[in-house]
Length: 209
Image (tube, rainbow, N blue to C red):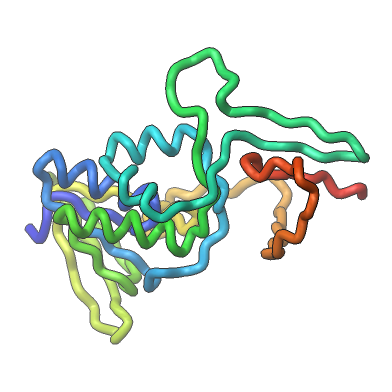
């Protein structure tokens, strides 16, 4: 076999899983369809993310990046403002986290997993999956040069997220009855001059319409 565990996707879930599996003594290979650093939406972390990073021994690498500190969220609607502080809770655990540029954040996690012993192959698109042989999983990938390769492992972990690699390949998806939704995004420059503006909380504003 090529490895103990094949992981599809080098995003946060895949990289954290690779790090933890490698520390347990398993040989891990990650197959990622894109080239890092890559643009990705989803910059706002929640405190529970810190617990996973801590368990994977990745906090030092993330902390060294000096990402924007975050301790809660503020909500604005129709001229009214309220806020929620993550540290005001009744259970143990993290009460703070970071706001991160995902391109850099994902790269840091993938690099950390690779330094710990995981192997990462970028620009490898998964085009086939076979689980017919007991105790052996098989994936087929095509790289950036159009070269096809088969990989074997004891286990496959699909961390492709919205890509849904295995559900699509194995025809496991169930059509949704929910209406299709769209998301609009942009990046803005902070020119707020108010001295008492709390930059430690993400601001969520409700559009008047």
